[in-house]
Image (cartoon, rainbow, N blue to C red; front, side):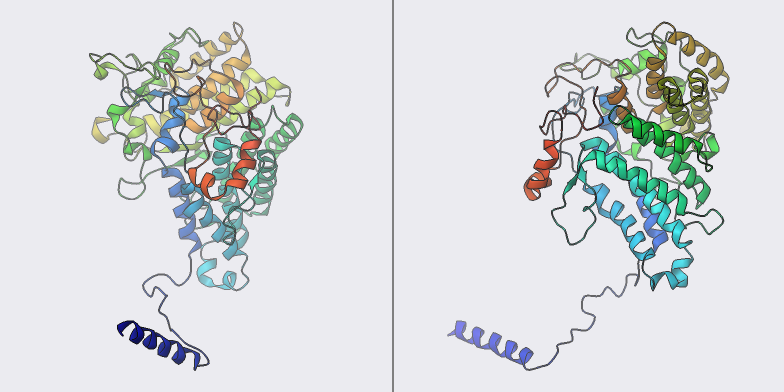
Length: 503
């Protein structure tokens, strides 16, 4: 009887709804305490902060382990190359999606007449910087995995986006960066919410050219014709490329509560400087071409004269005194230490490689020298003498006086090995602590000469990519299989190679 009464009650409710022409539920699903419209300035600031602070093992430390900047003394799963799927959601959600929202809003004729929108900068400048930021993020993702959801990735209606071949992604990077650079106007209002350049549009145009240089060099072995023409076009563009310290793109935390240095999330006891990195910069590594002490180590390492830890050391001696093994320096890991995105040193070293490849008429040795000197300069200014120094007893360090003599020594080293090897090694030395960019360069150039970790958990090789996320295997399997099929070999392994990695 009770069951029949319930059915009758529900029937009466349905009848009452159907007897009305419309049913107005009012503002039941509206958040009356939230903003009525998305603010493009806030979206840009949130994106830049989120991209800069995505950390943890997968998105900050693992490339450091692969490239042998650091090593694990105890929990050695990652440094021994365990094959685990890596989730990419943090880059697509509230990061790339934020940028897509900026572009959608900026293409809405009604919204762009709103004074609140226009207070965040001109339409073209907001769109242009959003497009450049999208390339920065996708550049990391495709280089980590290979083919990824790209053209269909940010379509809210598509829950199973197709994977775009990496070759097509790179071609679109060139289109996006060129169009974004050219649509922006430095005479118009720059965007608010920009925590990298403070809305300086000409700096973003310069960064677009710089990123074009990096994109083209990364594809140099896979499509040299397109790579060299793109490189030359970007280098010769009137907007310039990043060269000097004041032009560089750095994320600068304000304090530990708001803008955070992602290195602060790591327990220092779990990571040490790698033996190879310490020895190489001390001038004591047999497989490294330099025999000259590199003064950057006085800023990179908490003890530049100490030993490093053997990479992937399995079953290390229980009596090993980790207190005498060097660690990454607090000049880099303190809460308000800045973190580099794109530096002048990296630009010059790319130009050195381009000249050595015959793409330009520049002098490869002079570009190598300029890259080394600029690395010493920006390492000093941002890390050694930055605003975070003085905290926790950090004394200021200036290594700029060491730069010229060290550059002389490195150019001399090239006569004993090759200029390309020295260029590759100097990219590795200058990119610290940018593990992803250093990993990109090592996979392409095979310099420096690295030995895989002892007792590896994969097939014995240093990883060359990340495994696709488990969610893709479960929920987007058909497209996942297509992505795997373009790898070499066509297996979802961390030693398979992506399109541009042909060496």
